Image 1 (tube, rainbow, N blue to C red):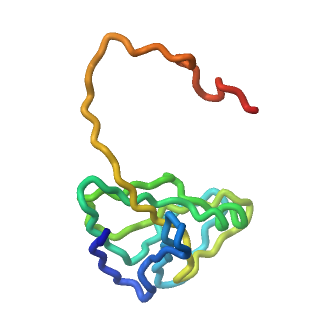
Image 2: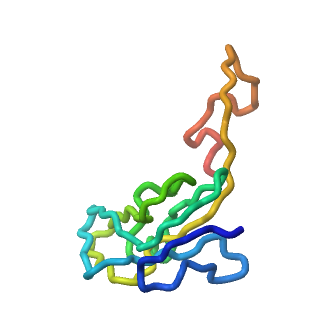
Length: 144
């Protein structure tokens, strides 16, 4: 699938690191390093603008290494970029660690996954079909 992209950063376009990768890394496009204090959040710009076809979304997800090693993640994960959005892609990062985290220009801060989606048409009903799970949720199926 071809997707139109404008790159106003000085970084290469996002790309898949391996043949089986689902996500492409997004890089910070900042004028100067900035520091996220513990529990602080910030929108970090990427310099990228995309034009998705209708029926697709771009999902902004955390990078597992950044989350595991530094405690920094994407706050609204996954963040959704709709097909009609034409603004710059920004990543809402949050520092969940106990130490400051410095965002450097060009640092890989998140990953982008392109996903097909469906549009729902609601059908109002008076009841739903029975299942063995029923209304059980939030751990009702057990932990092992």
